[in-house]
Image (cartoon, rainbow, N blue to C red; front, side, top):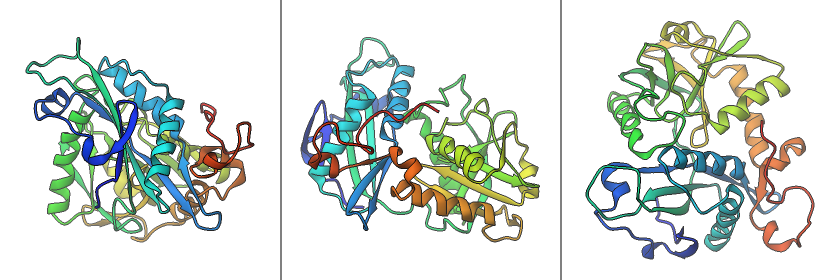
Length: 326
């Protein structure tokens, strides 16, 4: 992966090489940082780059920061606007990934969350698939359990907590699997290493509830709406036992990074037919059309990067306004 050309840090855009921190930085030493993940999609027909649901992502980013007692001097809308400016500065004309990061920047020794100074940085890079085998993923149930909300807040993207995900992911990949599925402390299915998980059984879509130590995913929220409103399917949020995965007709992951991934085998057991099923196939087609701004009724979620630069204030649909809460 090539490094970014620029970064937004401490309120301004600078060359990436100038966005530096010291080795004693608190966030680096103690994991006292939060991050986000946002995707932007290139629409070749329109010659436009669309950022998908940036304000929603930044609302969660600010909430995650609050879990670490960070008071950020930004709104979700201002961070989204800065992101558009950064993307225009980079000049991306391909699919890309945006990484906002808030971290305690004090260069001190001592574990705490109070009386520290948060800093905010945003970068972006061209980005394709997070999991290469996204239509036929082979996963394993990890021996590592998901971090419990009473240990580290599962609802926030807390940097230090992702060591848990890294342990599960590396063990899975080094054993020949594409991804890991992680259980909660009480043995229920929680999520992937960095993805929410769904299963289809007897025409009903089931996904672990938000009390199962999962990230309250924005893509998860989008997918639930699409399943209900566009595909007419019942979606149930509840605890899921691991053996239900083996009996499912289809299993799939969702997330900003992974997008929508078909899981066709778990621990060498075929899921359903052992091939990508019709529900996830239809869902993937719909989702990828939506994020590229091709579906009119979801166009408000897709914020154009270059048109915002050209259009005057008060321009119609697609400008940077806060999408409705769902």
